[in-house]
Length: 282
Ligand code: SAH
Image 1 (tube, rainbow, N blue to C red):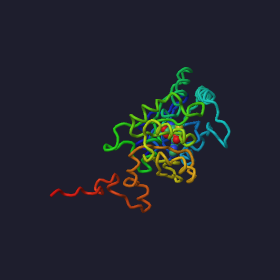
Image 2: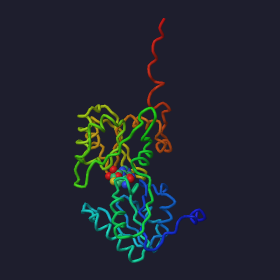
Image 3: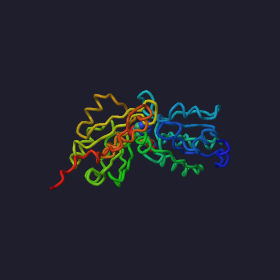
Image 4: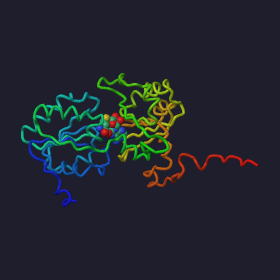
């Protein structure tokens, strides 16, 4: 492994690496992310980055938390960005580690633009976004040829903490067979209502994946019409992804993690072979 890492670009002092840490499972880190963890002087991390990933940092690396804790408001985005500038100017190798991918609902662009403005050199290291990799851990592919040739990624709330009003709900409901929603639990009722008002059926399958790819992963299979009630009854907690669409049905065939724990998978999850045969005409 170390031999492999030797060819990776040097993490130079005074640089910021803006790195995606993937959905949770440390095995999903990229080689660049691992290299950065082993080289960084300071690691500025978010709430979504797990302990086992933090433990991979160099033993003398300074760990700085930049997320929400105990319900207290998170540090202002500008403060975090300015802190990155300050640390880089001190000549440190600054690793900014974010959950998933830094450019997917991760404000990576905002932080990087502050670096550009301050003329701090940086590198972006994409990560596996939870909306793709996290769902794969639940056995739900975001595309499946038979179900969809388009997918939409949505955020359930905007910078003000409310359902974004600049979303064309009719366009998405009618044009996107699969919808993956980040940060959706809080406003699930409103989101489900908007999708149904615009033509999605109440019995459409919905998957809710909490703490995807971590040992605490939980998956709830429900429908658009019952998801709010089912979330409440099940007590499933954020961070969670909500996926709406026929691809959710594939989970009964593709829940590979469940299979490791003994689940018998269905090789015909969309029910083709099970369809009642037409009676042969005489
Ligand atoms: N940049 C991240 C997303 C940050 S927004 C990415 O690419 O994945 C934060 C939201 O991401 C959470 O509210 C939740 O909806 C989702 N999320 C991130 N990690 C998750 C995980 N392990 N399990 C479920 N949802 C997750």
